[in-house]
Image (cartoon, rainbow, N blue to C red):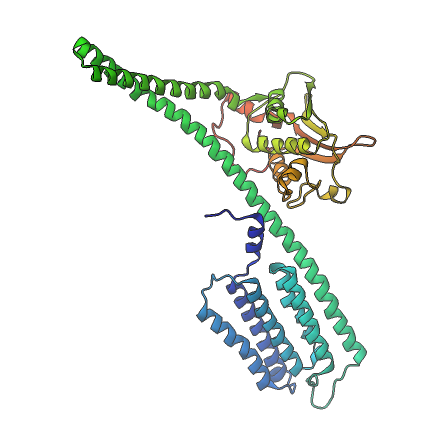
Length: 459
């Protein structure tokens, strides 16, 4: 099974459920039936009731056919959904042709199918439906049956008014279509980016669980290995010089393999013991060192400083925030010309990190959108150029989301002239930065806070 790419995920998110269109069409059928019946029987307007009922019945027959042919959970392809919406436009145009064309105030309902398309279909399908609706409205402005009116009077609007209605439909389709598409696209991008963030956190959690399982296995296997060692020694003493060479060799081999297993488990146990305190708490300067350690061999000068007023703050280590900070450091190294500066500062109230590089910085046209999903902020980095590609714009969004969930504020900007490069500043209230350490020292929860707690999650 192959993994779905972000492009595939966004494409799948557009697919409409057939049940959605069927329900909306039933709603339209109900409204059309009420309007036609009310005008004909309630107001006594002389409209072609039989033909109108036949046009409405066509929509009902289509809905019934779709219900019988497909399950409610069936998802339509983009083309199939566009064709069904095109049918709705034709059905509405037929009703308007019978009831006055664009002189009928319900002609503004041409916007509805285009609006649905804008929220769920690609722009090319929405454009085609919009042009189709405008074309039919143009035809209705020229060719239509008279507007039903009371028998003693005849209502005929001037062509200038009809032209105004046509212009309103045209502008309405254009504006609402673009607006709805933009809002829906941002919602889709945000949903997909948040899904990617959840996948990253799940991966980090699985890695942490594997570390714990390895340590548990080391402790649990120590007892049976010790028993095997005792049994081997007892057999060696019991057989003594009477053991055949083959048995003696097997006992020696068994003893060597047991010692090898004990050595491996000893390493796992010592690793767990060495990291137990590290996994619990870490100072700010050690946090910075952990972030820059993988970058030291990449040829970029890393200028690191850590100083502040009072004792150095200590935090609880959290893989999610470490991932976010590492992503920012990775970006700085990727785009830097020769140097990256990382400054860690603290005082009695706040703790902050500032990461600067001497690269090109953020592009001015996207600086206000930095951190939004699917926004590639600085073009292709040196790494991307070497690999023949560029990022999808999710890395900084994920990093920003994870860091802000820790209770921090993050600011992204360009260095002031004449300097060049990007500047990223992350600041925490000190009590938030050290909160979990205080809880664990004086008694409290022994487990990490859940991801759903969006604020004040300690790193």
